[in-house]
Image 1: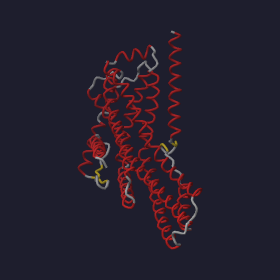
Image 2: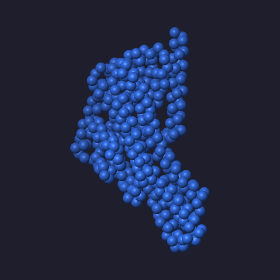
Image 3: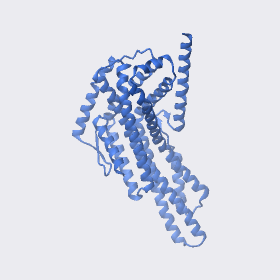
Image 4: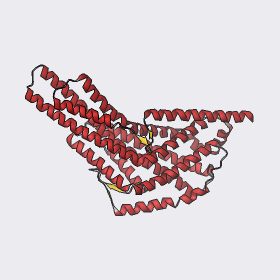
Length: 399
């Protein structure tokens, strides 16, 4: 792993501990996770300190006459709820976190001991991790700077504690998403490597077939080679199934927070499209903000959407990688002949396993999340924003 990637992951862990998102220690060399009394005490104090900020939310002014301000206020409230949920889950599912992360670490070490990652996979992992973490931090800092004026102007709060509460909420939500993303990308990197090893097995099968046709290898050598390939294939299938189960467990650990974040993204998209309409209300709202805030907000929005796209891509890569495994196995059935009954049985069992356990990423166990749903959400936000713009235009025309 490159030094930059290590620093970014370490920074994410330190910030997660600092803001009370996690109370777990981990060993960088092995990825082993464990609890430590001193860190647990600090985490408890940090969470109690965050809960002391909750009474300040009762002083919020959420009765603005402007629709965009009301939507942003709702997003602000959802951030507070997400932060509280993160605190509750941090303690109620602590044992599940430790077991799941240790299972993920042991599965990764087991795979890499047998099949070391290629340079191509390592580079893909590092690029994916670096891009997401870097854009995540830049977007988070930009949103925190913009939220200071929002709390002062729209929520009518000049209190230092309210500004601190806003910054803490934004940080907690982003740290939770970064931790979730790092879990998913560590699953994805093994799935990518499994597909790479599966391609090598298929190429070897094709080469053995050609050698057999040309009479360059005998039956004994052919059987021994097929038995080795069958063993590899069975072990890859076992690891792939463990990753499938781990993916479901990780999604269940973060499903409530992810749902809250998607709702916030949905509302933020509506508000963003609506604010670009030059109505009297929007012009009046924007006039209240300082010039530096209006100057940086387009860049912050750009960073936010890039970060969002990278996050969604990481989520959908899990499902797409498993689907790619199934595609490779179907190609084997179509283009590659059978060389040995045991090898053919291994291919068949791997295919049946994928068919029996289809991958589905569900939010709170109800809604399936995939690329098509992401596009549907985006299309729905545009439609709702257009309805709001039409409503605003009608009211202005009547005036």
